[in-house]
Image (cartoon, rainbow, N blue to C red; front, side):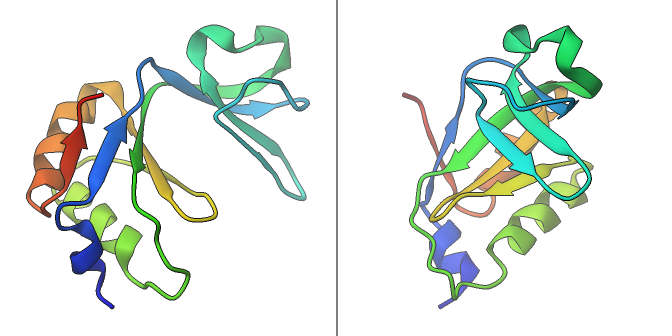
Length: 128
């Protein structure tokens, strides 16, 4: 099973709105993602929903892209292939994985370059 097989004609959904990646003081409702580790709480949420009182640090103007494919746990190299093609174009990513899907965040100003680069891998963008 090759990552390229999953990338070809896989659908990618671009979420509406701009998101912030927040190093937070506490958990918050209505987040796209919440990550809690031993040293910090990270929230990914729509920028207009961020509570400034909960912010330790904030990175704004991210767009969320979701690969709408169920990816098996034994699949290797999927995110590496995505990261490589985007890195070649100077597009920075913030990657998240859910149980069966992967998500990447790219800066809003790099969205067009990301879409162009991912189309080279055969990715199809979902317009819904």
